[in-house]
Length: 314
Image 1: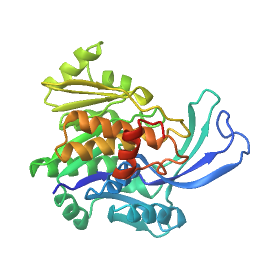
Image 2: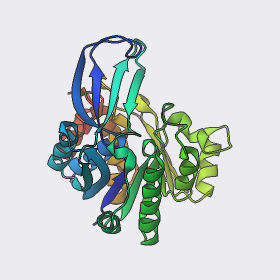
Image 3: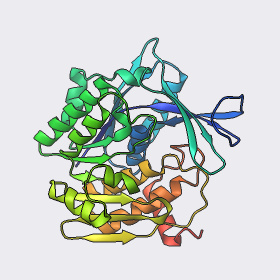
């Protein structure tokens, strides 16, 4: 049976309850919610009953325990999470603007998860895994980049596979070494999962079909293009498939792409057809946006079955 691994940030999210542009004034807040793109991804994998693990660091504080308790409850192997005495768990303060976009204030690079380094125990955990999922957000600090690339190389050398979701945010795109790391990860990727225009950050072509063909020619086995509420598309050397999204009322989009990716990867590794994997992934992303909080909308298989059965009309 496959075991999915990810490495990267674990943090808490604190959310402003009223809309506005940033945090230059006192605003009411709710939280802490467990968060971090790799943590959301792996939590969704665990909720689907798939064997999985995460390597990260948190402070020995309540924010760290918020995450460890949630991940443990949802079936994730947390043996790779170090609690750092006197350390600080990462955080993200989020406020929605009137147009629905979000303003973030991050504390990641200088928090506990900004200093992830691999111990012998971590290497043993990596060697027990058969698939590595890389989130672009996790390429934020040199030691974390080195840890991710080490895991990618070890898992690939053992015959495993790699999926890659760029998940790029302007706030972190210029982190030291990130652009180079993105290209290195892409060169070792089996399943590439960009959102919309991210596809063109990695290809010279200007049209989608040409960009897909260019990336497949570089050795990527399959590409999934996420389109938010509009659904998603799947491409490989023989297949091109578009699938519409589910009509739901959006409450909070944070984490939806991570849940989508986790569900697709899980089904893909379990041998599902592209159509089935895409269907469940779309349902997972849709259900995620109906809950406030980045990890609150992670779904079980039965919850996805119900949404698919009712086509979002329940």
